[in-house]
Every structure is written in C-alpha cells, then in structure tokens.
Length: 486
Image 1 (cartoon, rainbow, N blue to C red):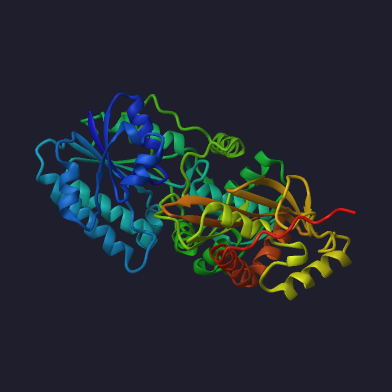
Image 2: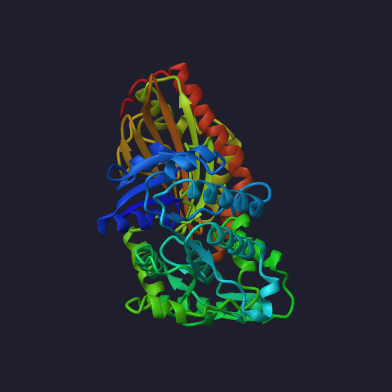
C-alpha cells in the first residue's frame, strides 16, 4: 500500500514507519522539518512531504495519491487552547482527505475514555482525543484505536512510573491512585496499527489493552521488576493539579504533559477489548510486567528509538532535560573563530587562570569540598592549555580530550551523584558552534534535591561561563609558554 504517516517524528510514528517499510509498504511522511526526517535511519527510504496542519494546501498535497493514512497528531503540548487546535486540524485533514479519490482508509490512535460512571468527567485531554476520532469517523472511513497508558522505553507513561518509583521510596499519593487503568505495551500498539491499516472491513472504535490494574499496581509492579521496596500511602485529598505538578518536579515529564497524564487516571479507564479480539485474534497483548521488563532492557542497552520528548527543532540557545536518569543543561553559541581557538579557550580553564566568571563562588565551592574530604581546587593543573585524559584539573578529572573538538571533565568533588562538564567545538560555516553541556546523574531523591537547589545558580554561572569562552575565543586567547619543570 501507499501510506501517509502524520506525526512521523513523534513517539509512536517514529517507530511505526520502519515497521511499515519492513512490511513492504511505500511510506510518505508528513513533517514540519524535512531535514530532521532525512537524518533519521529511515529517512532515505520514505517520501517526505513537508508541511504543517495549519496549511491546508500542504495537507492536501501530502494526502494526494495515498491509499491510507495514519493520523498520529495531537496538539496537547503548546500555548493556547489545545482542544481547539486539535479540532481545527482534524477538520482540515478530513476536508483534504475528501478531495482525493485514492484515500480508502484512515487509522487514528486515540485514548480510552473513563468507564460509564465517570464518562462525563473525562479530562479535557481525553475528551479532545475522542472528539478528534468523531470528526475523522464522520468524514472519512476511519479505524480508531483507543489505548490507555502506553508502556515502552522512552514513553511518557513509562518514564513517569520509572522516575516516581526510582526516586521515591515512600509516596504520599491521592486515593484515586487505586483506580484501575489498562496499559498496553508500545510493541502491541504498533502491531495493531500495522494490522489495522490492512483491514478494509475494520472501521469504528476498537479499544486495546492488557489486563486491568491500578496505577498503584503499576508503580509497585515496576518496583518488583527492579527489586525495589516501595511504600505507597493513599490520602483522601490531593487535587489532580497539585499531584501533576509534583510529577513535573520529580520526573522529566513537563507540567503541560504531566497534567493531562495525571487527570487521565483520576477516574477508572478500562477497555472493552472484545472487538479487538474478534478483529485481530492473532494479537495477544503482553502483560504489564513483560512490557516493563522489555522497556528497561531497551533503556539499559541504549536502544531507545523514540522518546516522548522527540519533537524538536533546531538546536536552541539553551535547553534543559531530565531523561533516562540523566539531567542535562545544554548551552549553544555560534562563535566567529576557528575550532582550535574555541578549544583553546575552554581547555585553558582552571588552575592559576581560574574559571573566568564567578571565581569567588568557585573558590567557595572548592573550600566546602575540601572541608568534607574532597580535593577542592588545590590540585590545579599540569599545563596552562594542554590536557591529557586521566589528569586532574582542580576538582575535575579529564575524561576525554580530543583537540580541537571535544573536552569532557568528570567531577571528583563530593556530590550526591555523578557530574560531568563537556565542551564541543563543531565547525559551522566560517566559524564554530560551541556546545557546553553539564551532566548530572543523581543518587536518589537527595541527589535530585541537590541539583535542583543549585539550578538557579547554574543558570547564571554556566551561562556566563559559556559566554566567557566565546569572548576568549573571538579575542584570540594567547597560548602561554610551557612551564619549566624543575
């Protein structure tokens, strides 16, 4: 079949495309960033239709000549009324689809609604997804799969469960944490989507999921897989908004995503899987435990093909992330200097020259580290510019030095976790792109609190540091003479 995939660089879409290709389908992807799509492993094997859902002409062009289309777009994250955007985009898609004579079917992935007793109290997020399904079904032959929390390496639901369980030995949780939900492994979701697009007789709503369990059971089930002991104490009153913001603090999930995720489990959300079993008897959803074990294995192996935070544009001036147990603060600058000049600017930090900015704070941090048994700043450095892997620079250890492109320092100061500071000098046009990254892997909740307590100071110190490196590189930092060893 000739198939269009919208949302192809998202969490599900990015995993669906290679599966469709392996099944022999011709695939066209509808994306905002064509260059990003071309850079993906399957980028050379698909047709790329650049466009935007706010541009009806590009939607019509993307749908022209295809047999089927996957609608995997949601406007949940972003400013303004996401439900209104979802509604407008669905109408745009239907109008474009009705103008082409080739389109025979649409497959849409939506979300489960609360059971009958709570149906009228569904979250705005779930209500919007259901409304999109109704618009698509009313205008085009559409198969709508409705799924609960999707469990897979890098999925938002899995990351929420993983971080809460790993970081909180004891949890004070709202009483509705005992409500039943029906998760499903991302691998099973992909099989349903691939099978569904080939079933011309399958239209309407099909609910999918594995065995029901409470969100509390999801947390404790993860703990059992990991061999952790965890205690959950339900309390009668804890507003969903407050609970969601706590999730946003403890996990890498942003508040604008955590709020709809949490509100989605305030009421029981269960699937009626009878139609799924009738239409797709060969698909047997894996258990929640099996889905968690697979997700953890993929995470340990570094085989995470897509993440919940996958939608991204060009490299930002500043970015912050907290994913897979690693906190990253990335600062990027374009420098009017060659890579060797940029490398020399950051490779000369520390020792007698100091750290260029906020030196009194660096000295205070060194003194505090020395008082608790750390090396402090007393070790200095061997050479003003040259660095070799394994040698010390103040309270850092050189982990990688690859001039004129990469320098990575590992912290040997006393901290509740592991920390690195890295610079990259990447040739770009007539100049260089400088990327400065601070990494931190916290040890438990104390490590998380330590990092976030320093976050406001980091915003000033690390920003001023990268700007100082830029200034030194563009000014042509002189190469000091090699010290004479007595």
